[in-house]
Amino acid sequence: MAPKSAVEERSTVFQLRLTAYENSVKFIKTEMAAHVKNHTTAATNNKKFGEKLGTIGRLESYDKLKEVFTSVSGAIEKVADARMELLGEGAECGGYKLLGRLEDTVQGVIKPSKALLADRSQKVKAVDKEVKGFDSLKSKASKAASNEIKKKLKEAAKKGLDPPTETPEHAAEVASAAVEMPESLLDARETLKNTEKLVDKSSFQYEERRIVDMQLFIEDFIRREIAWHAKAMEILSPLIAEVRKVDANGAIGSFNTRLERVNTTEKDELLNVAEQSKRASMGEGGGGAKEDAEMAAEASTAKEAADGAGGGGGEGEDNEDGL
Image (cartoon, rainbow, N blue to C red; front, side, top):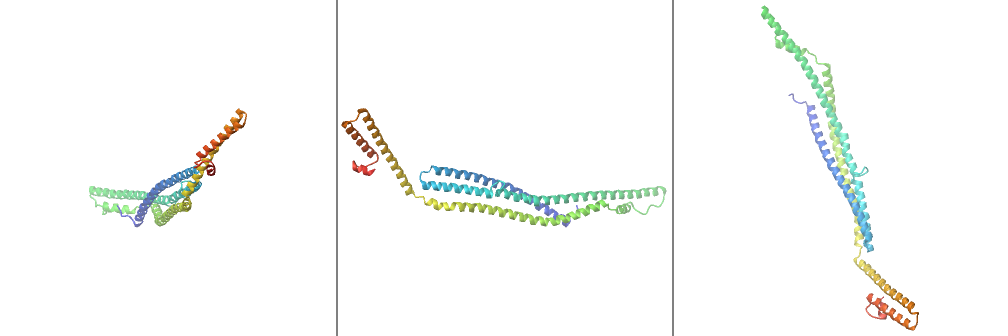
């Protein structure tokens, strides 16, 4: 096998680098697609979590904590939206755009380079085919010339004549050299030469473009990852101060006020029961001083019972002051 020319060596290096780059891009695309899907799933789950926190906030009894839950709920949903926008897999989302950058390098760098090298390979095959055809013509001419001399040698020996001065080997060599190179072979070689020049030039352009494409992709990826984390910091950080403003003592006071309202309601209900009983008695007995005195006594007893339910420490006027 003849040694490769310098151009062939460079084409081989180009092919090896192209194959390695293509495999790298395929791997990155697969992993990036999974990464983007993870971001999308996480953003969706985060948004659902934010909505649930909002529901919990609506059920919270202490107003200050209710406000915090509402704020955190809205903030988490905003962070989820930012994450989706910067790294999600929707058509207008950042993850889709990152994958688009990888597809751009496939379409703009890898495929054209592969097509060019494939074209060169076809040109090499075309030259090889023409060379084989040319070699076949030379072989046929050489064989015919050699056989002609051999035939003359036999006839001379048979007839006792002087043998030809030319040997079969020399005749074959001369005949082979006399065969002109066909135009088809010349054209094929010229075409291959031009293609080799194009491949040689394109290999440097390819190297530059693949490096630039990968630089842009990596930088864009890093910026988007930083951006959504920064957005999360921007949205969530102010909430720390809001959370710290929630006062447990305030919650205790609110709870105590609620209990007092419950107690007051119970007292009112007992008084209402006594009043209803009084009215019922008046309706049955037709009135009178005696009945009035009895109803007054019942009302007084009901009031004392209400005072006792309210947690009053004493009796009479002291209990009334405690209401």
